[in-house]
Length: 179
Image 1 (spheres, one colour):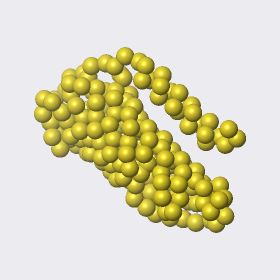
Image 2: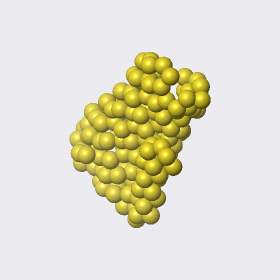
Image 3: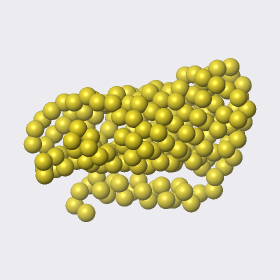
């Protein structure tokens, strides 16, 4: 593999396989905090479908902050197909529902992305800024969450033509938490 992005994708997939072999842990009970959200999980991996389609991960840094990442493939994005990598810093300021079985936190954040694509038979790439907004269905008694996310993206393209473009990406996904 001559392209460094393909090596990075292999490393991320190897880490995902190692994480998948770890024993899952039971979700911890949440502290009652009214309508605020407090994470009871630490690290999860799963899949997302949409733009992009691929691997999704989330690591909680604190009670209501997290890093999330995605590695996937985007097809026909602005007429281009390619590999997509992103990482976002997320805040979970409020939970829309808090019942014994689940929490329904809303989250937003800021992050970046890298998109490597083939544009008119010319290797090109884009660096972008992401602003995700989403909602998660976070189970209290199981190490799972389901999520729906929309992200505003501002891309800076390189290659045969320099360009700037704005778009919206959307994905749904499922993550399994290991700790």
